[in-house]
Length: 94
Image (cartoon, rainbow, N blue to C red; front, top):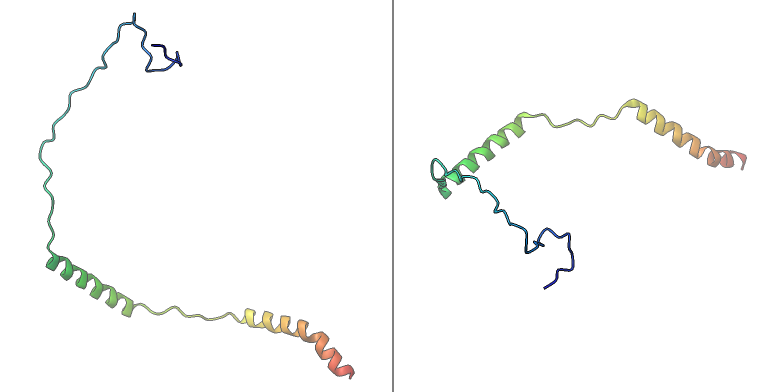
């Protein structure tokens, strides 16, 4: 049987000695995994408590204010005046 790729890592010539890989010692765990079981009632109580605390914090915080700076109004008025200038000029000429 011939192998098409001679440089393959799988290819082992017949006359070469094959060294077995050394395997390290497997360390056993010091204790077994103990799963934690939760009850549905306890989970529901904790969820209600967290929701209540969240609602209290929402009530205590102030809502954000949306104060627009006066400079924005000034810029909008100036832009409106500049854009409406040709229309006003036509109305005055008539």
